[in-house]
Amino acid sequence: MALGALAAGACASQRAGRPQDAKASPTASAPAACDVTAASPWIERWFAAWDLASRGILRLSDAPPPEIVFFDGTCVYTTSAATGGDAPIADGPALSGTKLPWRARAHGGTLTLPNSTEIPIGLMSFADVAKETGPYFVMAAPAYWAEQAPHVQEPGLTGVFLHEFAHTRQVGGLQHLIGPIDAAWAYPEELDDDAVQTHFAAEPEYVEAYLAERDLLYRAADADSLVEARALAAQALTMMRRRQARWFTGDKAVFATLDGVFLALEGVGQWTAYAWLAHPEGGGLDRDAAIQRMLGRRRKWTQDEGLALFLVVDRLLPEWPALEFSVPSMGALDLLERAVQRATPPG
Image (tube, rainbow, N blue to C red; front, side, top):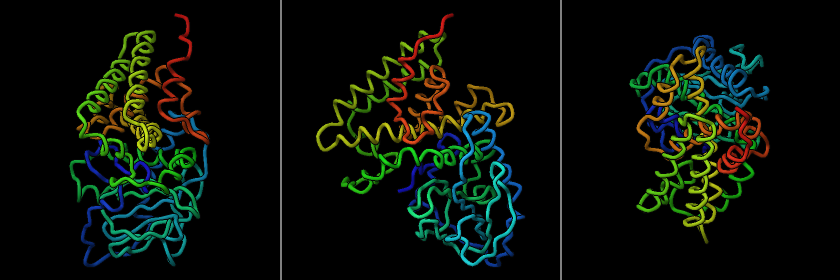
């Protein structure tokens, strides 16, 4: 199961993450030699964006890098031995000062992921976990996006990267919740960040309840004062708990855990991309433009409500990254409750 399997929909408006959803593309008929040096400029640009987001915005401590798989129409550029095969290790871009063992080779239209799964190349960006080696990250190169989805342009494409790359730092704190559910999953829909939406989207009363709480969260994020923001967020939290108590019962109780986990995953991804887009050294957009860029078509509940929730949490509980990027990690509703209960500072 790929975690955070959608590209930041607001940045890309493109389903781009589940390996089984990958949109296959023909490879070049006469591939050139593969060399990570040729890919270094855009890799370095994305890594610099992550350094700004992780160190300057989220204020996270550095962590061991995930295994990385980038690819274009001909070549794969990877730090994974499983993906790189017998290609020689070469120098390439460092991540947060850490030297990485880069390999580059022609992929022939398929990728062997770090978990040894083989998939066709396609328009994708996702994070997952390999049992043997830990978190890994997969994303198509900018040139591939330009060919397959020319409407996805910068700075939005870097937002897609940041949204998904943030998941590599979250999975360690959430895997203890997701792993057992994945092993016992018995529902016909795929277990992914849209599982709740897929299961309940046909129930009008459920959709009405979801939309009401989502809209309250955006009102809280835009409220004129912290007192008003906290009051609106408290109402939204009550509505969220009430929704879960009504619909997530019996054999559907597992959806309560999934609701919190995927709102946290997608909310953090959306907020990280938004914050970089709104940073003067990042995307350089103003706050409203950055939010609108992340909203996109608003088709995915976890991304839409997740962004609203973390806009509120960031306003009421600025130290939230230390709680969300921890092991174990805090679910989205528990984090919102912590933010609501925090005392309002004087003045």
